[in-house]
Length: 322
Ligand SMILES: [Fe+2]
Image (cartoon, rainbow, N blue to C red; front, side, top):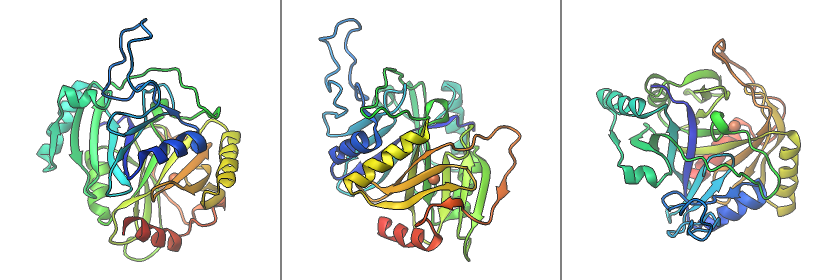
């Protein structure tokens, strides 16, 4: 399978509006101009829609955030089960690739099915299919996402997305081997590098599907499944530092101080998000090409990132997923 990018991510949250405030006032995303699944109205008729009127809020209370030319990149849906990934959207090249992906998944013993045109419309894409990774995350494969351009960050932020996708997700997985098999052998991700930091396979493993150093990380710290963090990359260091200022002004907990990772070269910090998992805001991440070969490394950072040690990650992960 050939995944082109991590196209979108959906989370569940008790109150998505808290994420709308956080996403727009701290990160600097724009509320989606139209939410997926609603009509844009008639072109050239400004009175004809969309119904959500640029609020980013759908009739069911879901919130959709826009970061670049795509109509939306992150969706947050009302859920009393609290914070967590609801779905991960991976992009493929077209309908042939989508159908072939479903056949391949089935032939390898994974649950998979094509979605309907209505389900695709509900994500503002052209075609969609469904499966699950071995950690239980719902995986959506799609092609033909809606681009509505006109991105205007309310805080003047510029995000590095486009063909590189949303950013990256670092997933916590209890069964490391099963998830490695799924992401590498089935979805076709390539190992960028990894670091081991304890007994029993405790490790962080990073995989790319395009130029971004990693779109998916698999973190194994014990019998836990969940998400450790989502990374969003900015176009400039000033974007990162301005966000850092806002985080401090708002009294949001900084989970890891500014620093630069050894593996993906990302200069970043990590903060608490409204519901559990952490958000990393970064800049200057490494771009890999076809000459890249996998590496292992023995420490995580060139400098900084205090709070991002194995012990803290393990403790925090237990908190997030318990
Ligand atoms: Fe990260």
